[in-house]
Length: 369
Image 1 (cartoon, rainbow, N blue to C red):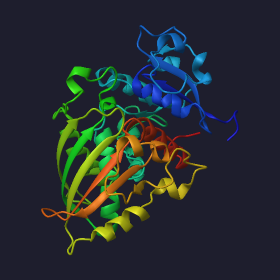
Image 2 (cartoon, helix red, strand yellow):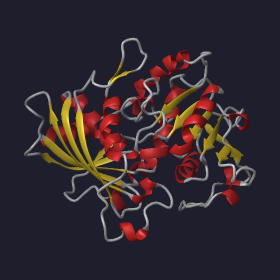
Image 3 (cartoon, rainbow, N blue to C red):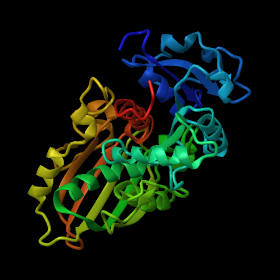
Image 4 (cartoon, rainbow, N blue to C red):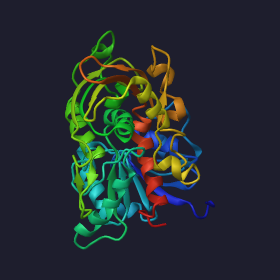
């Protein structure tokens, strides 16, 4: 796609942690161009470098240094077809609705609309078919929309779990029980996050609302679409029940999860069969290829053989943080199979998922270009 034909995009919450990740990931995108940045009223009117407390390891990209931050209102983003929202949940809900009503395609990292029965909750390497519900979402509004919609990506800890679960269900049929214990990085709490005296030399065995999110989000993501296309059937494909225990640990980036599952179909697969199924798992993003979905990983899952892997510091950057890394696949004496998975919570668990969702929407004509 030529520079002239690039799709102009806007980023809401551009000064925050997720907004900064959107900027670093989109600065050199082959067919998206950052055209507008939105943040709070106190930041609006300032050049981006003055408004932001930049916390990324790479410098502020040149393409945004001259942009002036705008208030998060649709009238400042008229040229943008796509809006990426990294807004905090306290303000995201109504602002994202306003952008949808102004006929923008909104890809949100916030939780506000995830439970909406007409808003797709998409992990891009698992359920991109759920984008089809956008049609019903548009028609449900009065007056009906022709271009505007909201799509959300999942909670960061849910994302790392459902990719291996999807691979297992594709190969071996439905999973009925899943136990997951998470060891979640401090960046998942945003900046400035957990105070150092609370997290250093410590594990905090509670993250507000996190366990509930994993338990219900997994069902919506792995479920099907209602026959009339007007919503989701959470248990049409799987009788899955998830029990989650979430912990905050002193790791900067990368959520580790210890998972045990049981299958409906008997006999259950062997560890060797599970390894093969995960290594062979692909999604629509891989079928479409890098030309159409440039931010997608080469493979959704990477399986490591070392008995002490994955580890956040060693493995979170595999495939630029866009894949889920799995290891320690073995029999479970209580359920059937257990394993450890790792995902980069600020990339595939947040901004990267939204970007791949947008690329898939463009590729499938859900976003009109």
